[in-house]
Length: 138
Image 1 (cartoon, rainbow, N blue to C red):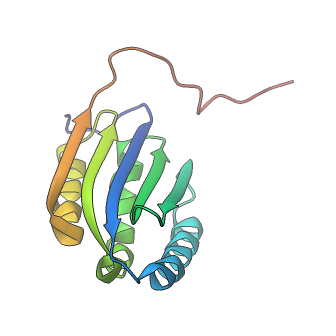
Image 2: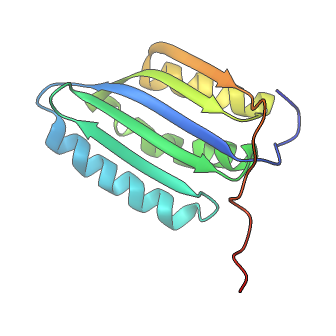
Image 3: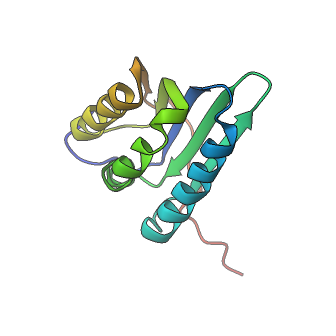
């Protein structure tokens, strides 16, 4: 954890239990949320929802160029995330990358708001490389 945003990418994954018989409402809410985020957060690399109706589970994956992007996403999206609360219970959040103290605090707030405390797990990169910011020049 640091006081400054990381220079490398941040990968966010959360898993939620979907309340039975709320799938149609949840899907409508997800579509609205994706449209909201896409129009207001061009810095995000990836924002994707994965649904499993057989097990009543939802997984969200987002990839950010840095910790500042994750902070911005949670701050801007917070009121929109809350609109999904009646349809699910957030079970866990996993984040891969170096975060600021502010980002960690925002994640813990999100876990409390959308779940029953949920688990927030943070992982800093040990080794590897990042090609998200490279251009493919000809």
